[in-house]
Length: 173
Ligand SMILES: [Zn+2]
Ligand SMILES: [Zn+2]
Image 1 (cartoon, rainbow, N blue to C red):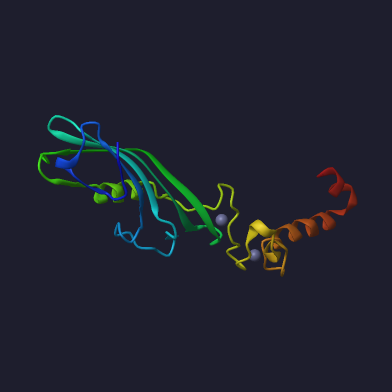
Image 2 (spheres, helix red, strand yellow):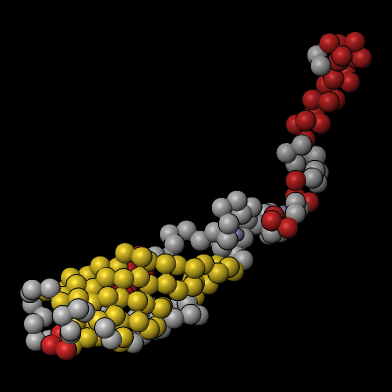
């Protein structure tokens, strides 16, 4: 069984036992461009078994790569390995032609992209007030800044307690 390092195979060349396509292809060769949220510094590594059937050609195998993602919550960058184990494409009516797995690989690897980008599930994100990365610790936004803040109401309750006097105040505790 021979190895081929590209995603195209001439069908008439296929041995009955099939051929293994093993190699790598860049995201730009697949027509996938970097975005603000995901960049693709590494190629897609593929290992695909291409087998001739009676009237069809079956291609099965796995793809893997690593993405560089930007976290939706904290905007930090992180690496995300992606693997697709169940590549499966069937080509019909290709007795004398060539099969090209580029489009199939492109679709399969895009399906492996994450829907949400989180550096980790429990990422705390950024404070909407001051922009501090809350994974690195709390910010000062949660401390009272003025009597107009969210704590003003609690201050009012304390004052009410004072007015009731020590007796009643203790009873209400
Ligand atoms: Zn994050
Ligand atoms: Zn803050």
